[in-house]
Image (cartoon, rainbow, N blue to C red; front, side, top):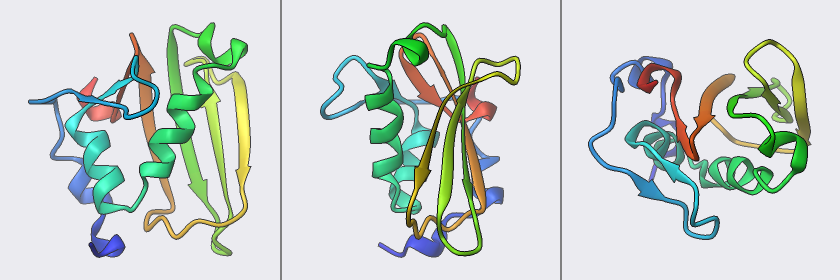
Amino acid sequence: MNQNTLTKTDLRQFTGTEQWHRHGIARNVLYTDGAQYVAESGGAYWLLDEIAFAQSIRDVAAEAFQLWKLKVNPDHCATLACEDGNYNVVFSKQIEFTDFPLDEVSFYFTDNVLMLPSEY
């Protein structure tokens, strides 16, 4: 697998999902084909894990709609943040190192399903 195959243009092709994918550990979390593509093409299954595991945090779980943003800095550290959809950050985590190929990516999480915004 080449981790540099993921581009922002690739993500625009996802407008729905043909298959639901169940998270291997957080079994109540499903994700779409687009999220699966990000994990596979970007070497970012860790990112799906971070979002799925954060659902056990009270402030995060209290939000019916969540906007997740990963922002990668040029020095390869990153910030993963969860917003409530009204620009209020309810969770944030510093990632010390990542080789994620994009400078940023966003996901929606609602009804226990993680998806790209274009799949909503």
